[in-house]
Length: 103
Image 1: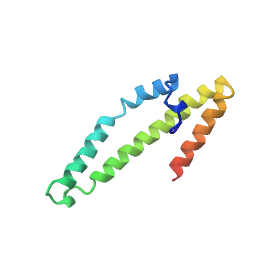
Image 2: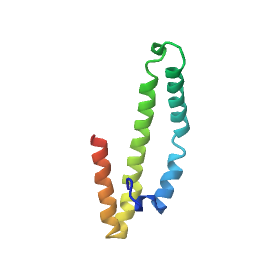
Image 3: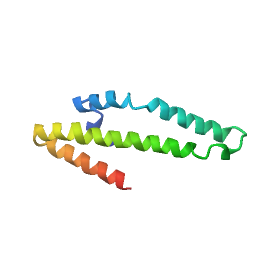
């Protein structure tokens, strides 16, 4: 799933995921990051909005959790239903996700 050639293939699960993620407020997160960039680049006191970085981080965490939830709810059951080798692949992806969240 992460960085493999197979992960870049468009599967029904990845198509559903991209449609779902587009509605999760990615534009809002992008706007928050742009605001943080402006705050750092402009000659104004950084202490005016100390929570800006925390809000951006919290929004990214919500997206990460949504991706994880979608994978568990949609992709893993789909792979298990298809049987091996798809089942093994999806379960390996799930373990990889747990590993990444644990770091």
